[in-house]
Image (cartoon, rainbow, N blue to C red; front, top):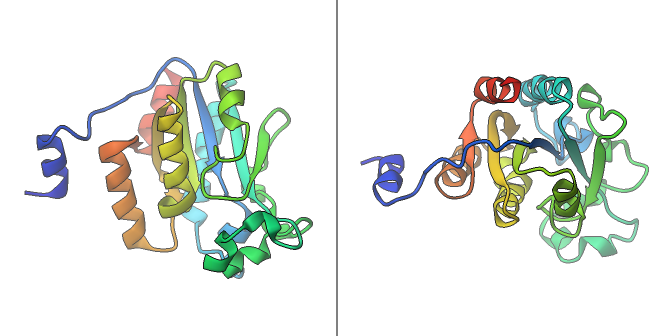
Length: 205
């Protein structure tokens, strides 16, 4: 029996589906993560290109779009003990090009860029309150990394009461094994992991 079959047999992996008011959350597709010359980066070209298509669908539908970046003060006080675990986070300082959203996904007026210090887009930000004010009931997640900020944000999205959809083609990780493992676990417990084309069709409908 596969893990997926085991989960289904035991009452996991049901579908939450789309509600009536989806928002797109693009997590940390910043230059520091999409440029492999940065210690934090990797090749995420395919995922960025897929996310550009997803962005077009949301913008065409005049639906809410939110981005996140990660940045710390010069003294790294706001990084707490996290920077002890990941010293490369010190690359993400104010004024550095590494904290800028990848230009292939450049935010437009009215699309908020939330600055965070930890994995979840919801932790220490007003993202949930802003989405509630926009009457959002479904959060579609794109970005990186699958095993880190994407996973933490998807779990928190569920915990804030949003239907949560992870766009399979639009999330990436430095580790292929961690990527697949976390997608499988998210799909079993916290979110629907859905192909890009299916999401675009749902948005258009």
